[in-house]
Image (tube, rainbow, N blue to C red; front, side, top):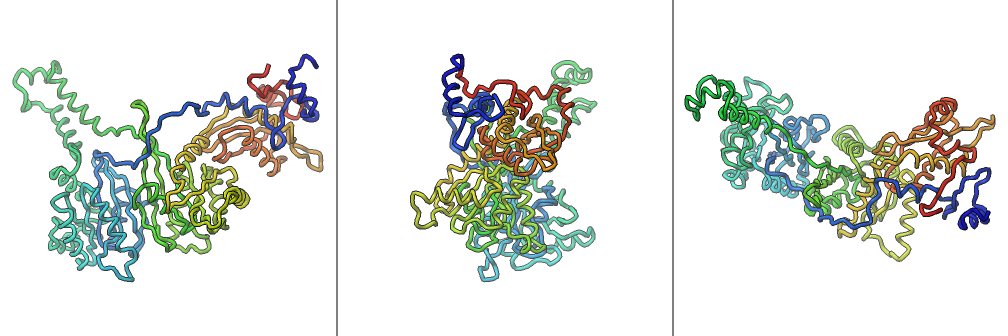
Length: 610
């Protein structure tokens, strides 16, 4: 025993060798610590450097001037959201549309493209100037519409062609003449004019509004939308309300094609230049070709930085919209004490500028969703589609913020949402809001609250917990660091050799249980096949012999042995394979010995050990 190092001799005296094995595994606070914990962290490529990196402060993302913004306004229930869905091409999964007023309350942004030009549409709620009991959130909706008009390069005024002109349409037209006309173009779209015969007649009535030529359109069928957008682009170019060059890509391409095929002299050519271009020699021919290539290249889109989608999920009235407004630094969503204020999904784009010119900025897209009630309370209608939008936001998100009410505790609906996040394989951060409203806090309140949330939400026991207050802004700034860690864990990839070391140690300490018939599972090896979330395939003789409690045991041991998996679920896939096939392929060698056989190699838990 003198040939062994002193630290191995001391641990041998303490009895830390597992029974039936000769491989060394040291103890930890819960019984064992894998020999790969310190060994693997030195090899993992996603470990963060200890050197502090200078990161610029996060700010609100501003739209580029190359992409103008079009504000869509009008009175309630005239088809604004339907027209936005038609132009943006988001009939499925876009703005919620229903045959009742007041569905849209907040302003929602939709990207669109027409004639090679990219622009943004801002859908707003129905404008009402008389505040009474029947008009809920009328003042807040007007404020949202004013913000959209201040940002816009043009305004699209939508009216109802079937109902005809109303007094509220005249009030909105007068409001637009004072606030927008003369500064930016105002286009009048007469919706619900499907018929080509009666559409122009229905639209002629709206000439008396005094906001320009009325365009008969149909948001349901798409009739007249192309003429409307072409005229809008011409008005934007004439009034120069957008960046120079917007709306001229198609015209420049037509001119370049015409010059390329033109048989006679061009206006800027003399006889010599014309003959040189005709025979394809000299600068004149190269100039025409360069103009054509430049016109074609104008349709190429610029490389945009990757967006990190962050969904804000929770029960109604837990403070999701307040949290979005605090993050955004402005009134992005309407907030009230009434449950169900938020109808559609609202997003806010934040940006962390690049630390060097070679890098790209990091974009965070926070998506505020409607509160999700129990399934039995949701009837088919607008709320049904609101819940579907919220569940779809979970599937599309990179990180999900599960918002809880710190004053109300964990409810059954919170457990349902946590299980949904885990099943969809999304990284999760548990946000306990309204921490400032918790009374009688002491030095033990935080630890007790963390323990309570862990016990009540076992579905996401791996998720980090942060206690904050959206009303006061307490600890809201720490969200970005937790989100970055969750995103890194969600995209983490671990080498196969390290995974098999962890698997081998876990099986040595707790072999798979045997059935009464004497059958027991034999686990051969594992490897990671994908990320987002990390997916590990485990090969064994029969997956049916591995009960659920043993699979949870493997998940716990992998999290204890590998760092950086605290905020993401691990998706396990168990596949059956015969032992002789494994031996023939030589895949069992990555296990450093057959599991359960005591191991044939040696594990070195510390990098500096001799």
